[in-house]
Structures are given as structure tokens and as C-alpha cells.
Amino acid sequence: DHFTYLRDTPANAEVILGDARIVLERERAATGSQDFDLLVMDAFSSDSIPMHLLTRESFELYTSHLSDQGVLAVNISNNYLNLAPVVRRLGKELELTSRLIEYRPGPDEVGQLANNWIVLARDPAFFETPELAKSLTPWPKEMPDLLWTDDFGSLWSILSFSR
Image 1 (spheres, rainbow, N blue to C red):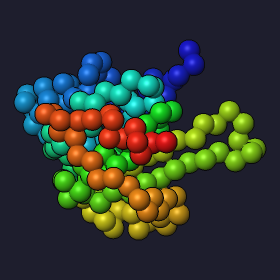
Image 2: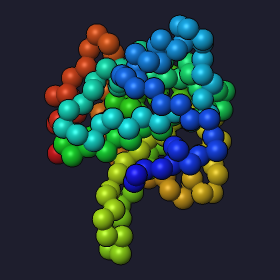
Image 3: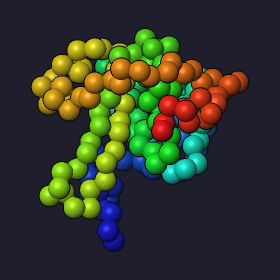
């Protein structure tokens, strides 16, 4: 009753329930790349981090489903951990340009929550559009360079940077 955007959209919207990484692996095996223009990840706001979604191998999977001009947007908002070093490094590993967007609600935006996103694109020119360029946040001057893989990932490494 409260969320009608899928029901009301003129787009062909399909909802597939399940672990996103497993679903994307199955789709790639069955039909190849989905050629998404935009792939959004929003799985990290709780205190439980699904680390398997933040590895080099998982990002290779995500980018295999993007069109040539496709963009990957990752919501890294978290109450306890700063995931920016991991996502930024994954972008470097895959030769993607990554930019940080931090949203802080103003005093008149009651009920709005702060959130942080990293947007990754193959084409650096994507970030030059005026609307997007004015929303970008400079990267912190000091940030660790952390790579997580399916064989290794450490929450401890980002705990020291997070606080």
C-alpha cells in the first residue's frame, strides 16, 4: 500500500529475490551480461556487513553486467564502519573511476538521514556533468588502500580507519 513505485512504473521492472551475487552469477551463466546502465548496491547500513559483496571477484561480476557506459553506485552508509577504502581500491583494481558523494541533510530536512555513496564508472567524463560534479565530495587526504578478495577480507583493517 505504501510503496507503489514498482507497480506504477511504465518500465519493465522485475524483482528477483535472493543474494544479489548468487543471482547475478546465475544470470551471467544462463544469459550473459545484463548490460545494465546502472547497478545499485545498497546492503551495508546495518552492523552486519555482507563482505562477500565487497571483494575483487564480486566487483568483477558486477562490472561484467554493466553496459560500456554503465555505472555502479554503492551505498556505503554504515553506523560503525567506513567502507570507502575498500570500494575505492576495488575501483582501482578494475580500472574504474570512483567518486565519493556524501549527503548531509540541512536543518530544515527533518527526518532525512545522512548517507554516503561511491559511484564507479569506466568513463571519467561521466563525472563532469554539472549536476553530478556539484555533488561530489573530495576523498579524505589519508585513507588506507584496502583490497578484499574472496580469499581475504578484514573488518579489523577498516575498524581502525572508521573511528
